[in-house]
Amino acid sequence: MRVVLQRVSRAAVRVDGATVGAIGRGFVILAGFAPADSEATLEWMAEKIAGLRLFGDSEGKMNLPLSEVGGGMLVISQFTLYGDAAKGRRPSFIDAAPPAVAEPLYQRFVALLGAQGAKVETGRFGAMMDVELVNDGPVTLILEKA
Image (cartoon, helix red, strand yellow):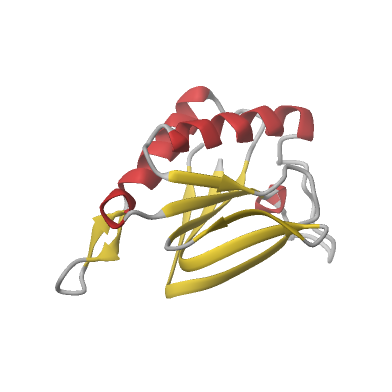
């Protein structure tokens, strides 16, 4: 599983011009899945994200987790995180889980994030999405769990 996590002031995702998910302060999570991802992988990633201390405390030091700032999460499936552009000019996506495998992983991951207590919004799996965000910091992390 690969994740790109961005700390944001606000974010929204639209499909065909209609907003399908939006948050204020929190995390935009772009999540890519591999065929070998398991329940343990999803649980580890959800707990890792919920516990990250990426928000400023009273001294401005990144020391607070999402739960302490009342933030939300906007989770968007992103198979292109498994793009391999080492050869040629057109990336290969053979390492990404196919939709029939990835969609249940995505749905389970969203449920696990929700169980961590934060508001969770989503994009629409498999759709062409317009994602708009205001990056806070900017703070961006790449997380991976094999």
